[in-house]
Length: 288
Image (cartoon, rainbow, N blue to C red; front, side, top):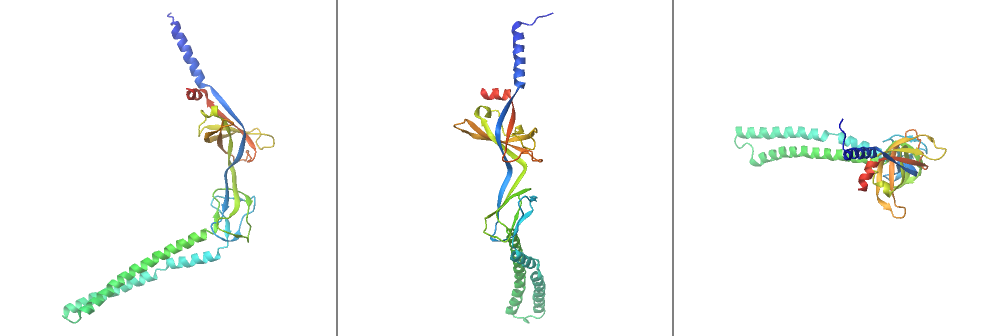
C-alpha cells in the first residue's frame, strides 16, 4: 500500500474546504420594506369638455377599456361626415369616364383630319388634345381630394379618441377626482387607477451587502406584522432595482423587488421583509 505525501494530503484537504465554502449561502434579510403598487397612475383627459361617463371608486376595469368619456356628440358627427366623404369615389369615376370620352374625341379628330386634309385647323386639334390632357389631370385631382378626405377621416377619428380615456392596465379605480357633468380642461386629472396584482417591495440594503445583490436575483418576501392576509405566507419575487448611489449617513442603498400578488397577500402601505440568498463565493470574489 502506497502512502500519499503529507503535503499532498494537506492540499487536498484545503481544496475540499474551499469547495465547501463556495457552496455555502449567506442569507441577507431586509426588514421594514415598504409595499407599494407596481402600477399606479393618475389619468387625465386629452381634451377640454364636459364629463359624460366616469367609473365609481372601487370599480374593476380591464386594460384598454374606455373608462372616462367626455360629451362627444359633435366629434362623432364630424367623424360620420368625414367617413362619408372618404368613401365617396364619385368624382374619380366621373373623371375616368370623362377622360375616356375626351380621348375618343381627340382620336376621332386625328382620323378625320388624316382622311380629309385641312378639315380641322391646327387650333382645333390642339384644343381637342388639351381637353384630353385636362381630363387626365382631373382624375389626378379627384384622387388627391380622395386622399385628403381619407386623412380628414383619420383626423376626425383621432379627435374623437381624444374625448375618451382608456385604462393602461387592468386594475381598480382608487380615487375619482371629477364627476359626471363637471367641466374639465385638457390635461386635468380625473381619476387614479391602481393595480395590486403586482407590488413593489422597497427597502434599504447595507453597502457591504450590495456587492452580491444584482438585478434579476430571485428573493423571498414575507409580510410583516399582524392583520395581513398572508402572515405566514412567503412569496417569490425578483430584484428589479439596486441603486448605484448610497446614503451618506446610513451607508445604505435603495433596493426593490417586484412580486406577483394575485391573492393580494401583500397590502400596499404596509411593510414586508425581503430575504436574499447570496452565495459566499460571490461575496469572496467581490472582496478580492
